[in-house]
Image (tube, rainbow, N blue to C red):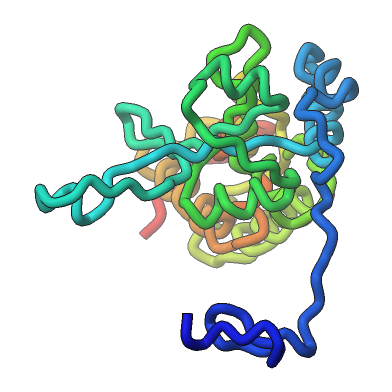
Amino acid sequence: MADHEPVAGRDTGGVPWHGRELTDNPFAQDTGNVDPLLAAALADPDEEALLAAVARARLFVPVVAAPGDEAAAGTDSVADMATVVLTSPDGERALPAFSSLTALTGWDAAARPVPVTAQTLAQAAVQERCDAVVVDLGHEQARVLRASMVYALAQGRAWVPADQDVVVGESVDTARAAVVADERLHGLVHDVRVGGLTPSGELRVDVVVPRGLDRQTLHLVLAEVGRQLSGDVELRARIDGVTFSVVAGPGAGPVSPIG
């Protein structure tokens, strides 16, 4: 190669070696085995414990051969390496990751294992517009990391259930203040508060309204609460969806539909 001048201190691309910093491979001594703490967490229903273990663990992302442009054109067979992204029938996307080489090869022996930190994995999932990460796909103890978990890992912060998240609580309080202060909704909303989680992990928001509110007015009230919450980008990164629960407040006089 004409530009390769090792004596002159250049690489094969003609770029000088001087000034470069070579970093150690953090996985150089990795045996490929599962982290014992992660193995225990995968068998534990405690999601906070699972996320804490995942955050500290090394994971493997499978990379597989995919036809290249030339192969698609019918010429010489060329294969590119691509990260696997799973797509469900309803369009949801998920990135698979594995706790060990054994788990990965048990899923696809031909896949190339790429070791990554949990944060790097999560950032890749966000970049690939994935809704979830599936750990140890195809195995008995496979676990799904939902979107709020993926964002927490990507941002390097601890994950907590949405109904216990201080930031989520503050966002709901802000939405409550805006809705209660809205003159169009005067007297139609008593309270907006965090009510817990649904079985699927979605945030449940209780909207307390006067008794006897007609369906059309109730729909408009919920739409405004939803609009206030949807504008909070940080909230969206910390929840896995939101469900409204309508709660009848203390007895009140008749109310008029929103004009």
